[in-house]
Length: 82
Image (cartoon, rainbow, N blue to C red; front, side, top):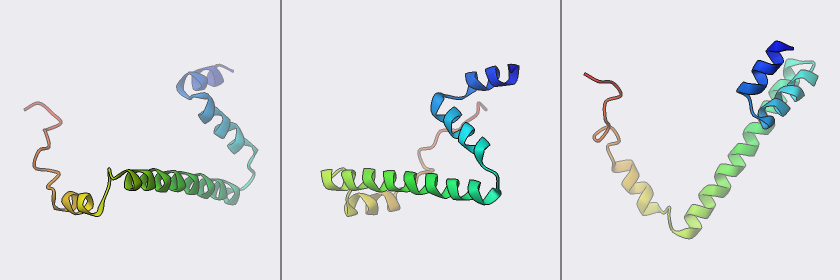
């Protein structure tokens, strides 16, 4: 019971719901299938968000080309103090 209380503090309600669902599963195949369903869901959400950005003009082929040319490491700040 104490472990459940500690776990509840670390996870939100949505995460607890998925954890309870995992407890119902009997095989690794079921877990893999759920993983695929969840992955597909988030892939669709990303596609929808990208479509909105494209339709709004916030994302375009020109912006993609600029991003590809950008040196992302040039302006990076060190993560530690020297």
